Length: 78
Image 1 (cartoon, rainbow, N blue to C red):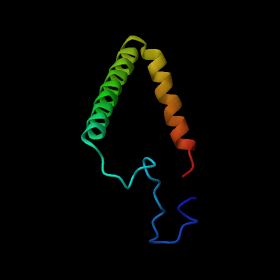
Image 2: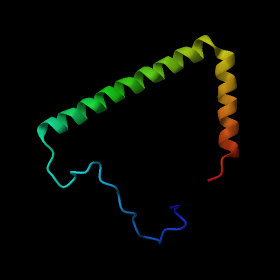
Image 3: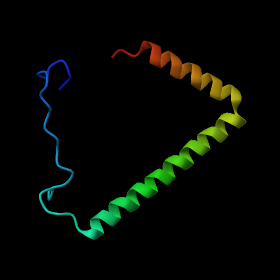
């Protein structure tokens, strides 16, 4: 449903993260969630570092990718 189809001021219902959303989270679930977030953050840092390295060693390809991305953003319709 797009923003235009929704009534103003009405918030769409959110899906529960899991089937047992009404049950309190255990310490294990909280720890597992925190560990997942830490692993994800590390992965995203490594990915950004790898992209930066690739941009440094392949400047022509990086420039082309930047120009391509800019063109996509210019032609994107909101």
